[in-house]
Length: 333
Image (cartoon, rainbow, N blue to C red; front, side, top):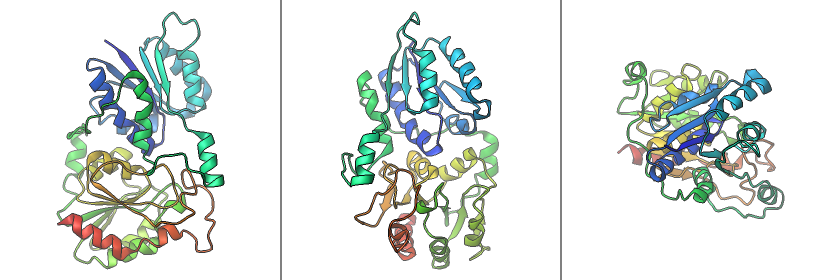
């Protein structure tokens, strides 16, 4: 039996996009044991995929010593294939121990390139050498062609959520309720709060549930527009619980963030509000991308940095609530 190790420690959006390779690996190596190294606070998402046989969790609080201990444990597993889907310092440390020159066996390995030179050309000189749109799922699949992995089946229809979670949240999504994901790590990626408020205001016949983290206090301002039909769950759910809510949603409206990619993976009708970023575009047929064509886009890898235009975040501001409401109603029919 072949043993395959995927190294992708974070972030939630990248992990979800990388999960798209699992079906391809199973297609090529039906009897393989697929294992994954992930940061401990992110492992809940992987646990819902029955195709992943074992998860190795790394607690970042353990630092360098903890990473070394994990690497030594993994070395005993004697993997046949190793895919570094992260390409950062931590994954390099793991590979140094897993792939020493004289280790007694020779696992095949590939790495997902971050194409730093092409990124510099794009963001500094507006020279594009990337395919458009910049779909992360595709970039995670490409390196596996070296192993002959080129066919990627659709994602599973069923996911292994805990039964307690199903009982807790299964009735949360009513037939007229829409899931909103207003948050993102960087403000430049966020649709303005006033737009979210207006969206709720102009759709009085619908209910809403808001997903976000504990720090996303602005979600309270959105819910306050219509508290009788808006449920603010920001900071009240774990990552896995939020994924479950997304998986049961009628329609999801989200910017470039992890739960957008969760909705894409689950095949949920979704509106993706895309602004300054380059590499977070969804892949599936159930996601419709809304964007404004500006010569300055994309201007950033992940949303860091200040907007260069006088009209700040024009790429997000010009996506109007009226347009989003119109698209939602078409998807809710």
